Figure 1: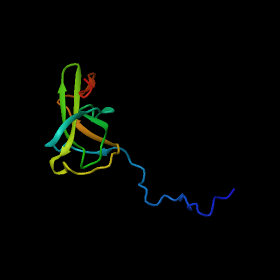
Figure 2: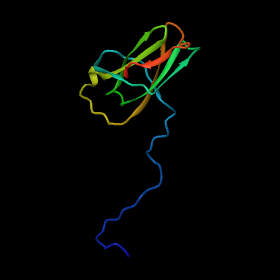
Figure 3: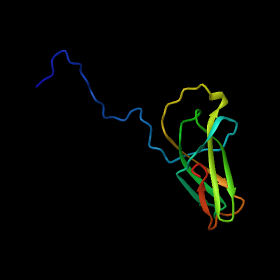
Length: 126
């Protein structure tokens, strides 16, 4: 049955014009410091690299400039390495409107001693 003559015409395009290409992976970021209201953020993975002298962290975040990595806190003991990510908003972006979309980010931190057999612990969860 055909729609009535007064019904709006709707067409659906199947081309992909204007869509972003698939992401090549998490966005590499560095701590910027000095953010407003920094808070702990849980990471989803931590992988020792460079023979365990560094740890590559991956987490879900918000878009810049509204959400940036403020700092990374590392506490090392004989049995564990606790790494805590802190995110916040730069003072200059305090009243900026940003879309609510999740972005995967990554950063790499250097340790005083290789990870070895120590356990990696998320400081945001402890």
